[in-house]
Length: 251
Image (tube, rainbow, N blue to C red):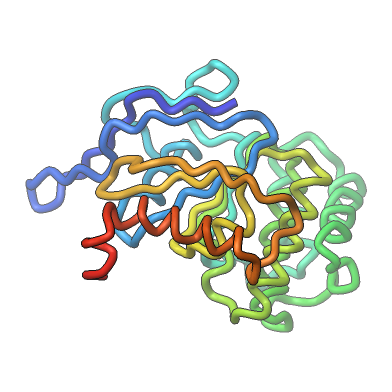
């Protein structure tokens, strides 16, 4: 479904070029759950923005179903780290907002929004405002707002980074259920190894703007963090992330 071909992105900062993404080649199959893992500043969010259509690559091509990605599309929904909800709108109105650009009447928009909220277990909060919700609930509203568009691809940029550990684990489990139910293709950006192993079928590790390696996670769902197999995957990804054992010791 997604093909990234020799993609590079260069930024000009104070007239000095900065290579944020360096000749990335990568593909994601339909219905696949892939995590893009790396340290801050490695280029993973830039790559996600290129996939979303917020940026055009300096070099290379990004293809969606064989066609160039081009501008942002409702077929590619984005969930950001920040909740990005309108504080003056109710939960239902926030979820409906993206549907206003499509040809649906108000009744149909609200019906679709309610169904999306039911999928994230928040239908009972439809009339509340964002400030009345917890951080985890707000992020579930953001996910519902993306799902209501019925996208083919869900792009998620560290969406659970701002919540506590217990809420994060709950949101991860909820996301896996939504993915299995909907069949949507997910690219999930994270800097958390544990999160990547728990969620993804494959983990692509980025270092200095390039893909350092891709790890197939062969563990069955549901996954248990206390298992020896989970620990083995953790160590393998650490080695991809840091390069070698000497560098790993230094970090």
